[in-house]
Amino acid sequence: MSFDSEQHPGVAAEAPAATRGFTLNHSMLRVKDPAVSLAFYSGVLGMRVLRKLDFPEMKFSLYFLAHLPEGEAVPEDEGERTAWTFAQRGVLELTHNWGTESDPEFRYHDGNAQPQGFGHICISVPDLDAAMAWFDEHQVPCVKRPEQGKMRDVAFIKDPDGYWIEIVEPGRLKALGR
Image (cartoon, rainbow, N blue to C red; front, top):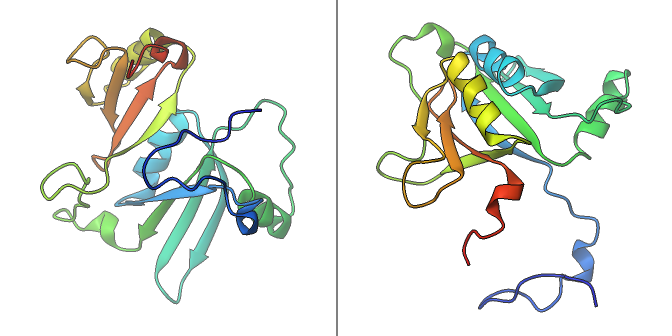
């Protein structure tokens, strides 16, 4: 029998048949200035913009980003690429409400200040030490370094809007929670 799910109170014994084919596609963060956020997510984290959608009547834009495997075939036709984007896993949607970039007082709640709510997104990296050196080189604010605190080999950095991003090297986490 292959692994299906850990069992804990509240976990369904089986995934309902009606949910076959469901996939977590994306998570959304609101950003103040898309140019600043896109520079960070593409230039520092290496994500690629799969699709931008503008909604002028509601005055907002959506940017869908992901890490693409080398050589990934992405549809060039915008409609096909839109459908393809919504079929992917691990997509980050950045939502920009127009005008926030020009308001010096405007800030989004990062979810970690009181009252707490949203916590963070997570990026897996092949080499945590090299990633931390890269973030230091680019002056990315660090909340927690891998050698700090009780939970070793886990880091947290901040994006331009103050959202926390957990940085992990999967091979270092085999003993986590044991």
